[in-house]
Image (cartoon, rainbow, N blue to C red; front, side, top):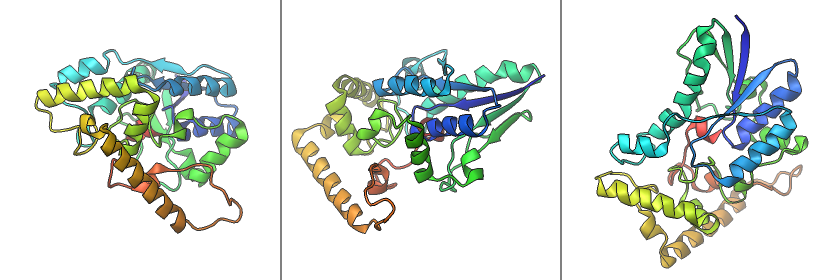
Length: 279
């Protein structure tokens, strides 16, 4: 029997910052890092994982689901995953993790899993343990580290942010249904092949009677029309300027380098996220 320590990397900023934080504050821990690969991640995610591995000095295990997105899409009658039915998180993220730690628990080990829920996210809940020897730890919440603290950790360590944060606010999965409409527009610009793949999945889903589209209330075939793209961009810029005027000036940080799309649109348009993917 042994004490095991595991930390899931989503490809996003919070989980990366937590890995850096644990490495810096508890270097005595032998942490096993893992990444559950859906097979539908942005190229920027893999580049970022390599950069993070360089800092951590050890590899991040890739946990591949036994069956990929296409298999589960067929199992769910071609219905797309949605905020109401998050089968992608359950089958492609949680199930591989539980399968990975099962032999550890069967051997009698105590497993502590570290989850990157920040101190300013009182509304979020982490992974709920179903085993008495699987302990969930929330170091950021315990240490009072908020979003600004996360950014400081990544900046000071030299790891930085994933490059997709230049145009996106959430998970590195290409067709995350929590994306804002402006992010779908940006996906079309940056990775047109992924946008076309998302369109084909959506078309098949609608033909099979799925009540959901990737973007709430609007299929991608409509969203990508030139006049609609122009309207989305205009709405985005308008909200951005309005948000910047409302934002209080911080004399210690007169220039904010990170533009958080979620703060512009909130929960009204694609807001929220699955903790496992987003963190």
